[in-house]
Amino acid sequence: MHRISALPTDQVEAYRNGAPDGYGNPPERAISNGQGNPCRHCLTYIPEGKEMLVLAHRPFPETQPFAQTGPIYLCSESCQRYENQAELPEALTASPNYLIKGYGTDDRIVYGTGIITPQANLHQSAEDIFARADVAYIHIRSALNNCYHARIDRA
Image (cartoon, rainbow, N blue to C red; front, side, top):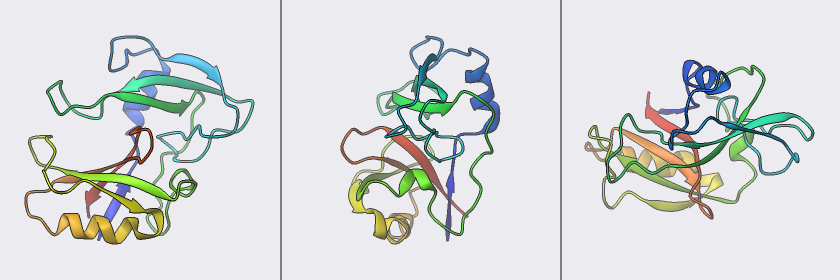
């Protein structure tokens, strides 16, 4: 089995305290419209009218050709990191499809693992990718915009 991993709390707290994003800029503050603003820490939608952070996130330890950077949202106030592995988090229930792809221990895409999978098949598709020994982890991204949602790790 595998587990869906939200952004680590220490990283999110650093962003909340003004740490630079993937492009070296402080996170922007905005107000959620209640639609399409999933927090990558609690993996729920940021309620309408609540303040949120918008920033460029690079979910890799260093820059390199495969280290994709893209926009994400975070609750500006403290929230509980997603840890419930029994069901999909709210932030992964709105879209009918997701782009998932495997990465090796070198943080580079493992070719042949990238697929657009229906949300209902997310767990099985991840299991299929993890059948390859050269896959260390998987990213879940928007099938339409390529935005990073979460990471899937081997259990």
